[in-house]
Length: 454
Image 1 (cartoon, rainbow, N blue to C red):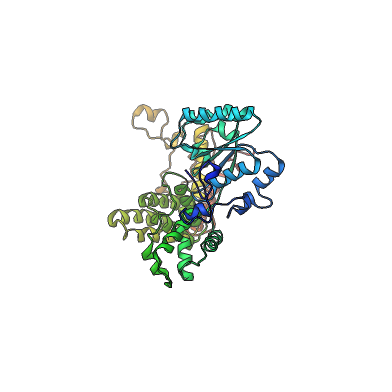
Image 2 (image 1 turned 45 degrees about the horizontal axis):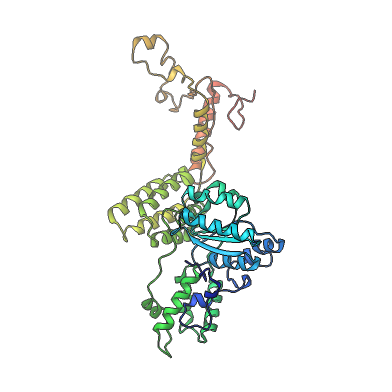
């Protein structure tokens, strides 16, 4: 198994750059850490791994990042740089029995004076018990564990294992890094890619941050285009099938993009919102999941600043349910733009959180007797409903009664923002407060928690 530029554990099988029968990724595999492209935050002059190697101590690591970013290559080159034995297993094909054999070889090597580095590809695929088997050999120094995962270690790896290893984040290769990789491949092959500039940039976009995928696309282009032919963008698109974007609907891609969509709508950026919405739809996200999240955004981040935000979001969900794809996607796009351009307020959201917190901690104080119904004579005799003023019987349609339990006193949770429709709501609240004060005298001053300052 290999990642970008990964390969066999046998040093004699290292790729030979002059062997045209080997895959291009094999032939371009870096022979030193300084040749790795795109992870300068780890391998640059001030990178984490650079500093670690300078200190002379290599600890256990978890390399987390998308496919084709160099995780296997870096693990192998770390063993080279430190002189450690290199062993590699894949969590897909290995079990506890295989690990025990690896551990025994590492103990034998250690007794002979040589340390071992065990690289575990897709370590997140090991179950909890299998992950626990690493703990003793990590603690007693039998080996250094370097695990690679495309999934968030916080969710997929045991806390005990994570406490004994440093997590290093590998990033998808950006356009500049992919272009540098492509130029390195062109130099090795001795011929430029038969693509015009637009087609070249399209090919880099197809790679989706995956260096290994880029080299595979290059091999396909070289093999398919005859001498003297120069492909434009449509020609490239007809030659290669577009790669599906890296997106796992149950894992990080799913949560990262819906988070990005939510924050761009909250940040009033309709263009970025459309981009992330399109990314999710192109990648195959469930449109009804997106619709539900748009409804949530309408009440969490807009609320009563624009009371039409919620109907717009609900209507978009209903429109998609009726039209399906692709026609219904436009309704989702319309809702996203509406929400992004609406005035923002989280006043209701914050007020409900405060009220919920009080409800959980205040016990069950009795509401005022004045607002309790008296369906029986006995309850009427007990004072239920006594003194209640019907608001519609007052000149202003507002009685100003206190509806909080007496044990709590009056509280204020909702503070409308001076934006959108909530400006009008604030005027109404101010008007009603003046009436309340004129009839009952000024209420006691309340602190930020709603407690009587007196």
